[in-house]
Image 1: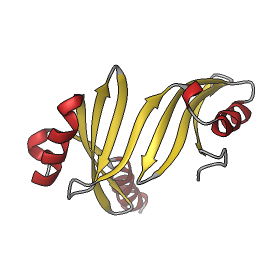
Image 2: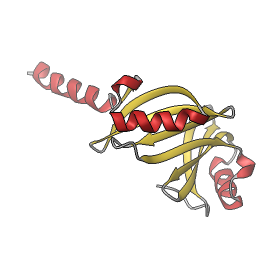
Image 3: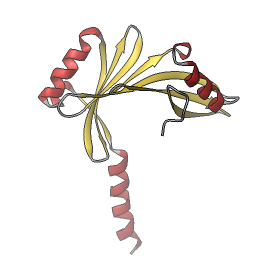
Image 4: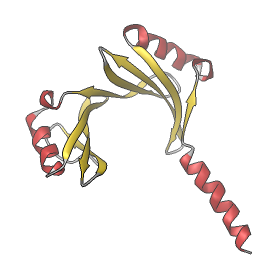
Length: 146
């Protein structure tokens, strides 16, 4: 009886963790291929992936621009949904800096990315505290991004 319960749970677990898959350019829908080609005119392509979030399929192009990482998330039509770009802590709004420093407390802020969704920009930071890494997201005004 126990093996009958374990098998469906194992399959469900694999399904949940297999949300992101590395792909090649030829695996992308034509509109996404065209969008990626446009995006990499001024960037170096590091990798491509397909991911499923809340039942929707998205494609991510991992790129490097001027030595900094920039990841572009697109829907199946090639429309850009989100752009994550490595950025200097000092270049983000003061309110966001304060919020990240407060959240980090005695920890160290290792990296910061700006996240652009449409016209809304927020910031994500990787923080190391007590030997553990975590991610914190805040809005430009310093409020926590949920």
